[in-house]
Image (cartoon, rainbow, N blue to C red):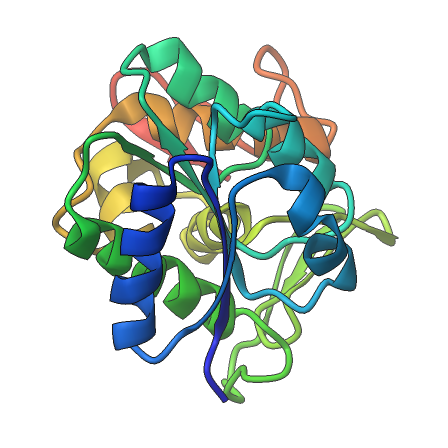
Length: 231
């Protein structure tokens, strides 16, 4: 069944262009020019990925991202005309999985959509393939790669697909340092991603918060300065 993509951008030319390119890839596209018109679609939960503009007329796209993350874990790609690193980090901190700076090439957006959906489908319990080692654990942390479950001391931890991917890589290499470059390659693989350490740093910060971990006395994710991270 075709994946369903939500597109919200008040610049109609951009929204229409994305719709054309995504439909050409056989995706079902729900296109809106404002948040108000899109709310019923968002609240239905019947979405596989969302593309949100940061600057929307009736609601900040970052606030909408945060709102979606309160209920759903499907991938979110932010569109922004801003180039400041702080704006990108803010989006990632609020739960976005990726960002694209305007102006952009439509095919690049399509490539990023495909990459995010591959990871989302990989960890979705409805489409996961059975693997020999589906359970990973360390201390009170437990991960099931088949059902996309994460438990901390028996309590469920809600992770985005990107966060889950990073944590899985680190758990699979428990005791060993994973460099930022290797982590990037393992999680994203796609060559169009720039090797920007701040992207990984933000996701690690998010993971630590959810795992109730600290930088000074980490129980799970330890920073190896100048190298990478390890469990």
